[in-house]
Image (cartoon, rainbow, N blue to C red; front, top):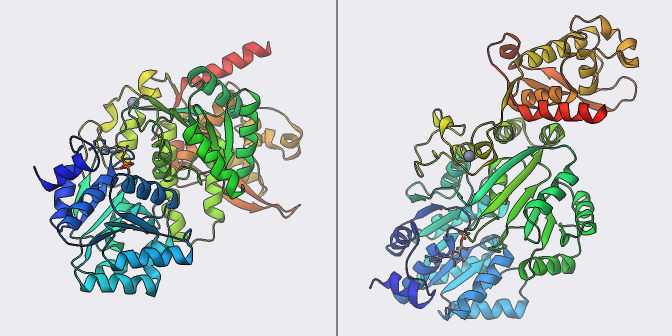
Length: 556
Ligand code: ADP
Ligand code: ZN
């Protein structure tokens, strides 16, 4: 039996390696560098734990595991110790004496695996220790967990990770394994460059999580939509509900609790003890629904999370994938549910615009947001799109041929059978005519003056509603006035959303002449032209039209 096989069985109690684990483990034991992309729950930890133990047995010393997640460090060190492996961690939670004790054990060769927070790599004291070990040939390997944190293009950039360049410069020859569960092509390239992993072998697993069912719904009355979703489909089950703001987290947790759901709030603004307590209850008790900001989830390993819901849209597909990936780690059916609306598009665009970052950075962020909007607006298979974003063709397994970020042409006809669009193919409604009329209305209304007009006003003009504002500005005289009287407001909203998502409609800032406030106003973009000229069509879900007729019926 190979040494790694006996470690797997004797220490971890598993019969076989899973997927690419065997290949990765052998490669690292032999001293090679590796970049591992594996979805959450894929079994990344074993990829460095087994080599660490085997190399220690071979007299090669201690493995240093860099991780940003204190909770995860504690869990893993606890589990390793229980399995009889000598492990320890160095992070800010240790007292001076405890730190000294770990350092002493490290020097005496007592530790097989040392978990360290990335900022340690910036301290002369820790580097001094590593220098000594290196000089004696007692540094067996470096594992860099959550490697996407090194990239500013990733969704969780941590400046401390930049210090990790020291590893290959100072300790050349010590094998390094970098691991992540979420990295698109751009982030991946950045990891390789930043960590100098050009020569590393890449192990890229399929990102598909077949047991997760993806569902993206139009946001109407999101609290009630969420309540219905939980009550009808996940009663008594554990889940996470992601919200954008702390205030929303607290409100939602309260509303859910009032409706008999075992919900708790979690965000970085709550007292540490409360956060800890809620997290513990989520892990230990059955059926807790955690309402949280994205501060929650990293390093939390709960296998039976049955759903992840987004009541606000994340920033990009990497974030969406990472957050939804926390559902169904046990492999049993789980659901990723998101409600998405016009306000999400406007808010996310505004956050990018108003961030202090430089223009080039904002440009990349806009591109990433657009890819997520494309996923939300998609009328074809969500899984095909999601995987295509990570450079993978559904059903064809993983690949990395350096294709660009966007969808793979020709992949459109594939179907996963486990997303909303596959299960209930949406009937399509041709919104091309409405889109053209909408764009010309925006154009004509702005021709009349340089004031700002909101989406509501534009729709009033198009639908021929003679409101005070319409009368005041003489917008009943523009040529498109009333041309869209057959379209409902929800229909026009859906058209606008899709135009914004595809970039055929833009937002720009205008300072109000009266109040001095800054407003977002709708504007035409270079992409509008193709729609106006009828060169592209706009396909929308029939559901929008259906919801209209229901509304009318109720009104009657
Ligand atoms: P990741 O870090 O990629 O999210 P983990 O390393 O936490 O995944 O592993 C996920 C789960 O799969 C853990 O419960 C782990 O014990 C289990 N696991 C990993 N590898 C194997 C294997 N070869 N056989 C059985 N279970 C495994
Ligand atoms: Zn599908």
